[in-house]
Length: 207
Image (cartoon, rainbow, N blue to C red; front, side, top):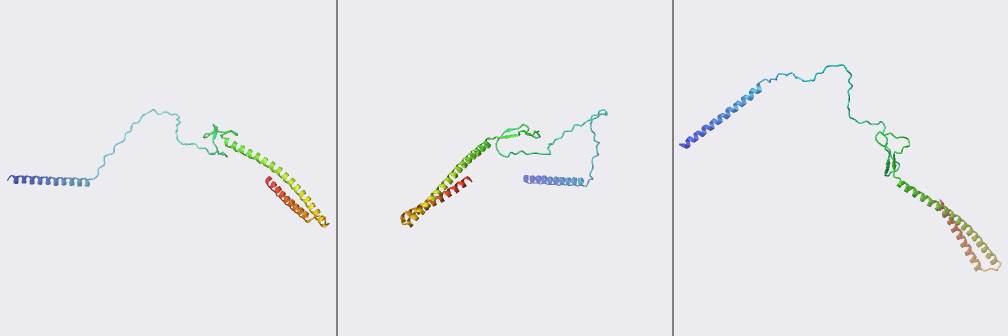
């Protein structure tokens, strides 16, 4: 009996809860439909009010002060480049943006150590070249003298050969003497050729 009573009470509470939920859902749906069907209303426009400082109007000349931001650029821009690279050891105070310079003013100075070393090397090489030229001229003069001496020696050897040939023809000289004179004359001619080659080499050395 008690179980049946509890069951009936539970069923009654469940029924009431479901009824309340259905009623609440109907109220919400009805409110939404009413809101959607209603005409939109705009609130009345309100007048805007500003607070200002009032002063007495007086006639006067006013000069406005304008502050602007920007960059002033020159119409012509120059770039200074040195013909030779190196470390800058001195820079003029005029080398600034918009600076004024005068004709002949030294704007920058590059460390002259490398240039001085190159100049010293060039002067040393020039001195060596001049000394080499003097040696070559002396060698050419000696080679020409040796050529003249060799030609004279060849002439003498040729005369000696001719004399031995004449003696042999008169049956006074021997064939061995003629052969020896021929060898000496040939050696003298070879010496002349060698001296001519030495003269040519000396002339090429001067060039």
